[in-house]
Length: 610
Image (tube, rainbow, N blue to C red; front, top):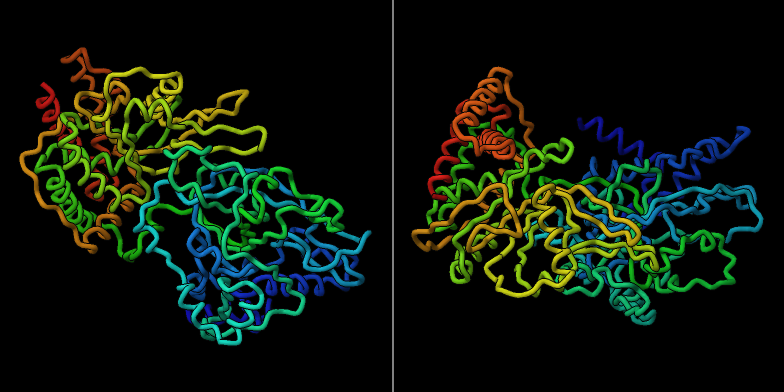
């Protein structure tokens, strides 16, 4: 393995040379690989054949550095708090959700400058003067407007912290600080890392002579011309910071709306590009689509993506144990989590067991309008007093276990004023988000004890229909002004109410009966093990042997004969509960034992309902 790593490192050095700083000067490495590829074909009839596919090996150099040489931890993680600390044209990471897909953008990817071929890939504008006319190649890149994941909980930020930018900023020499002061850029910093991990993060590396680095403001200036991401709706959290991600050499369908991903690439944030001169001779400006004018570089930073990957719940775990999820291991963690859930719910064993199944549920497949695997939960018997105790404890625990979660106070005022539905603003060409634009695997808790008698306005009625549709079919309707489009989702839904909710018809209704108020405190080690357990179990495949399935089917037929009120929906829920029960023990196939456990849980629930 060590020989393989040495071979890959030497290959990378042959591509870009050991002198390039892949974090501090990624564009230097991009141009070096491009020039080598062009030079290798210089003797042929077509000197651009080596990069006609638009990928000449640059991305592979960065992929090897990031994931094989341990370079990922050296790359700063871009967020609203450090925007002014990161220097443009350096390598950054951004973790977020694809909030809008802005189509494609054409740009002059390669052009001939005299006898030399140059590239504009991974840049907003050409770092070289482009002669007119010139031999050039028009390439295409995909634009995605990305935002921090709605409802993302703070513990997920510990999984990939990156370098401490403020500590690195203190490493600047007095001469460097004085220079930045003269340049009016006190808060900016030079993120300087050695591409091969051989030098200190405090050492300043010289840039290439031909690298043009625009100045950057440490603070985002206000812009009245930029439409608000949330349509000025205070009910929608986490919409003040966003990033325009440009992805290269990618098939159309790989990145989808509401995907959660990590994008690694060249960062640009330049107020000078906010209003390009109409008389500009730069052909790059002529190709910019109108939609990006609504997201000026002075307000929304750009990330020219070199490497990207979709993220799942497992990727947010700070300590990902390299152990096989054996049933013997998972069974112990299951018991630990179940005991804690029981304490949180006032020693209500039935409610704790149902909550565990709810937290482990996920949408496994769709058959026409039928969704298989979902298990929304409605705890009844709550009032404002009990919500302030057990509801608060429950929300705190869910925030500590799930990567993204939100607690929604469901009142008449909320229904009449909140923007739940995402809608297309055809004037700006952008999608304005709504509360229900969520990533796969998000968790919503609705507090219905706040509902009082009152009148629903037309918007309130529309919001009620949206929530009911989400509950019943895991679909969210998007408003594109001239038509409506339903988008599939996978959201866990928990409702706390006094009686059975009429607005939110859940799959499982459980009367809540707490017997005591217990002090609940979980250690960080326990929380980490429970997070790993939930993420692992939800990802397990599920199947059943034909003999087991036939036995279960026979029991269902018998149950329908004995109780004519049973329908297909309820029987399907029984099967879902049994499958989740099997998964909760780490089993990948359903057994009769798990089926009986689910039936017993259902019997106890119905007893309590009477």
